[in-house]
Image 1: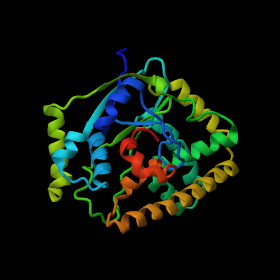
Image 2 (image 1 turned 90 degrees about the vertical axis):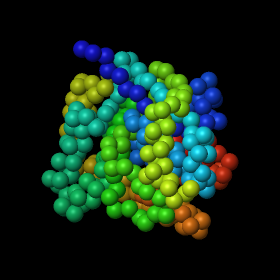
Image 3 (image 1 turned 135 degrees about the vertical axis):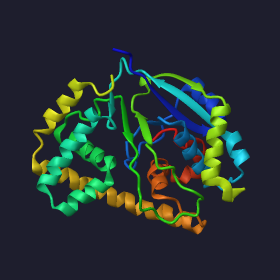
Length: 210
Length: 86
């Protein structure tokens, strides 16, 4: 069997890169609000990693895309899949957990409630699992060092004055709960590949900002 | 290992022991949490609205993890913490 690999991208202000390379990621306060819970977040796809960072900077009213590109640093991390436990909800084996809970809900709750929970996607079920962990004093999600899931798309969005929108594609996120599961991190230098991504984001998001 | 079948089987087996009452309680607690998030959602929304920003729900979901607990430090720290950790 070939060795499994899992690589994630994390974009941040370029000034953070050296510190992350030397000292690793710094975890801020945990929040109940985040959909995969506490952890260090990566995107499987470089495009979305960069786009999220750029959206974050746009809200600080920096709208010059050349400046945004210059300030955007990218970390590429390889995760240790050999020695750490990874739960990937986007694959059938992981999705089976969702499906199991959804079936119980479908069989026992009004259709309206089921549809509501279904509309909330992974985030809601993950939170149910967290609650059940507390109640049963068992490890469901907490037995894993890394959790991966596809970000739920909201097709009904609030109106936005941010230009453009996400390209509707699979937006898989990787939440590293145990930093030791990160095998290597290095800076991904800007290249023709990253230039192409910045240009695509600019086309999709930034034309009104120039 | 990604999706170790043994781990998945263990979880599914343990979930079989969950009673409907326990599931119901869990769902109610999640609802409470969502109500709290929705409240803060609006707070951020209003804050952004004042600045004439309308952020997508996608962004709210992602933004919450760094804004909820360190809001007062936002101006100083948020630029450096975006996406770093939840």
